[in-house]
Image 1 (cartoon, rainbow, N blue to C red):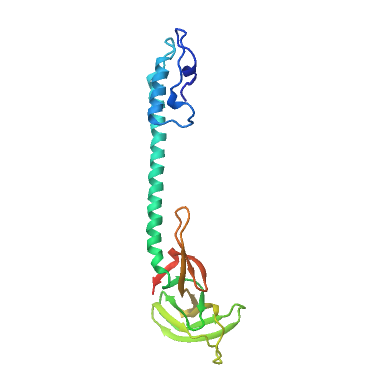
Image 2 (tube, rainbow, N blue to C red):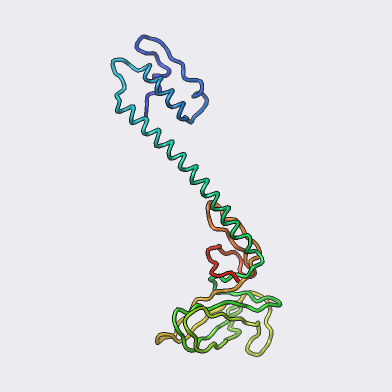
Length: 225
C-alpha cells in the first residue's frame, strides 16, 4: 500500500534512514507505529516525485478502517462473552427441574409416569394418544375424546391395554384426531427432568441433558414445570 523501500533506501541527498525501533520484530502495526512510518516516509520521499495528498489520505483511511474493524471485533467478542455468561446463569437453575420440550418421545421412569402435552391449534373430535415402544410396537391407545384448542396435558402410568406394567424407558408418543373435516396429527411436548447443563461453544445456546431424551438446546424448552 505504501512504499516501505523509502525506509531502508537513501533520500535524494544520498542519506540513509533507520527503521523505527518499535516497528522492528513486530508484524502488526499499532496506530503510533503507523504514524511514525508515515512521517518517515514523507521525510525520505523523492523530492521530484512527492507523494500526493490523496494517496496519503487513502493510506490513512485504510488504516483507520482496519483499526476500527479490530476494535469492533473486540467489542463483539466481549458481548458474546457476556451473552454466554447470561445463558449459563439462566440454564443452571434448571438442573433438577422438569421442562416441556418439543419431542415425539417421552420417558417412563421406574416410579414416575410418562408426562407431556398435546398442542391443539383448533378444537378436535375423537382425540387419541398412541404410545409405541422402542421396537415400534403399539403398546397403548388412550382415547381422550373431544377437546378444545389449546395445550392438553396427559400422563401415562406405563401400563398396556391388559394392565401389565411396562419397563422404564423411552417411548414414542403421537396424537391424532378428527379436526376440520379430516384426521390430523398433532405436535407433542414431552416432560423431562434436566440432569445437567452444557455451555454452548462459539456463542451457541447451552445444551440441556434430559433424562431419557438425551441432549436438547435450551431454545427447545417451551415451559418450565
